[in-house]
Amino acid sequence: MRDKIKTGRNQFKHSSMNEKSARAAQIFQMLGTDTPQNITLILEQARLAIDGLFAFFIPLCRQNDCPPLHTSPDLPQDLEIDCIINSTLFKNTGDRKTHPVLSCISPQDRQTDPLVKKLNIKACIGTPVSFKQTPLGTLWVIDTIPRSFTQDDTTCLETLAAALGLEEERLSLGNKRLKAQKARVRELEKELAQAKKMESIGIIAGGVAHELNNILAGLVSYPELLLLQMEKNSPLREPISFIHDTGLKAADIVQDLLTLTRRGIKQTRVINLNQIIQDYHNSSVHQRLVKNFPNIDFEIKSKPDLLNLNGSEFHISKVIMNLVMNAAEAVQRNGQVIIETFNRYVDISRGGMNEIPQGEYVVLRVSDDGAGISQENIKRIFEPFYVKKQMGRSGSGLGLSVVWNLVKDHGGYIEISSKKEKGTSFELYFPGAGDKMESIPENCPLH
Image 1 (spheres, rainbow, N blue to C red):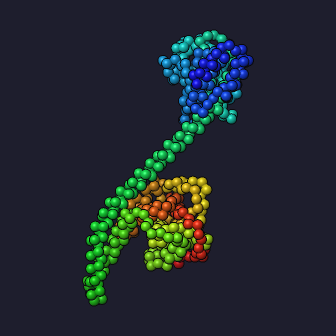
Image 2 (cartoon, rainbow, N blue to C red; image 1 turned 135 degrees about the vertical axis):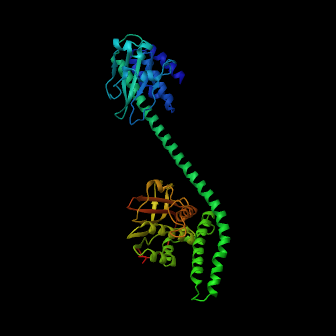
Image 3 (cartoon, helix red, strand yellow; image 1 turned 90 degrees about the horizontal axis):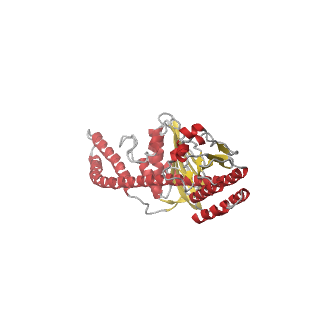
């Protein structure tokens, strides 16, 4: 670059003004791929073309995002940037779009302006810099010799300003991409921290679960033996039955803890999501849920041409059970819980709880018209025991944690949408296996 600048200095020194304007147009051929270096080169060529002291670019500040001020390399080392920005010579000129800016040095400026006093400025010329009619700032050249500027001076400076506008736009786009990349890195770091957190919780939960499992074996099996040997009218039957039922609820919690520990689905096969939903509908688990929530209308809306997926029927059924139970508990009065299935092709990567890559997916949607989830809580609802539940009564507090882990084990993704008092929708994306199977009829009611 320095060789180019030296060449430019010699060319401008021995050229007429018309020749300078022509050579200024050659700046587009001198530019490389390094945007900051290109800006420095343009500013140096502007200084040489006008034969001034130094050149600089004062950007417009838009939306509290002010880009940096750029100067030619020969800026005096002891001159602070704020001295240029705060100079009265350049006030209220940056928003001009087409006409050159000529700033006169008044007697008052010579006495009060710090930049004029420090450098003994006698003349300055500027021209607006824009990109596609959008003003970006002003290109200035200042001098310590009293002088006037010709039309050739302004034409030359406008040509260089056009090149500077292109480079400033490239720099702005590069900064935006860099900010987007940094934001994405921060998101990935948060996801990694969340994954490590869930893994740590799983390890702790596993150790606790195995110990509790050994204790509960006796708490569940011995009451069963006693009940088999006990007469039906025995006064001890009711308290022992209560102990037995409580032990079973505790055992369910232990099983959820073990699910958090046993990451990875070891045995998978091609399965159909609609068929699993039908099996869940016919199960005693769902029938008990219907009985416990008589104020809720449960409904299925499934697409008959649903793609298959690779996975475990048992674990997918557990996901459906937990989501439907969570949705039912969110409906405080009369309401509705809807289970939907459909195919969706994601052609552009989309972000939910995490980014969903392009591809063909089988989507399970479970929605309710309940109380909804506040935005500050959505990112934490998959953490164990974060929800406000009483263990053993309204669930273990592990249901959504189990859902998160099992969906990840199937290579899937989760999206959540919720509004206060408007309900919540969970969309689970499972990679499609490609083959299709006959499924249950569309809009089949659950009861």
